[in-house]
Length: 109
Image (cartoon, rainbow, N blue to C red; front, side, top):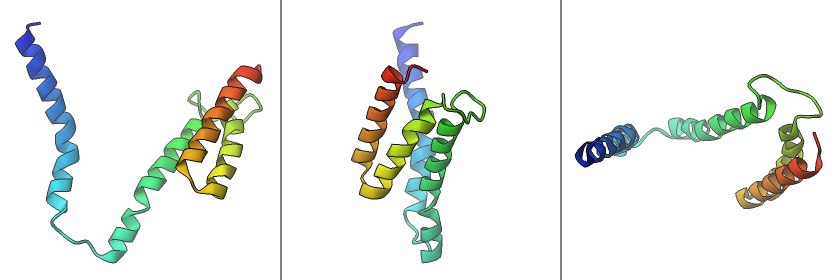
């Protein structure tokens, strides 16, 4: 491939990636949505994140895996309690990462 085609490909991929993200923001930012719709939309991102997290914890290998050998399930327990207690993303991530590191290294499963 030539340098020109690589540069064009980078610009094309960038445009295809950015346009679907930027156009809705550019178009919809001009209108003020009703309060009820704003409140409803505020729950969409946490719901999606919760669904992705639950899938990663409960089905790490592609199928539901409830057993003592599921390290993600064990790491979820202290991480969940820290998230509820502190309501801090930093401490929640810190506890989750440290718990997973300890389980990987010392659980022996």
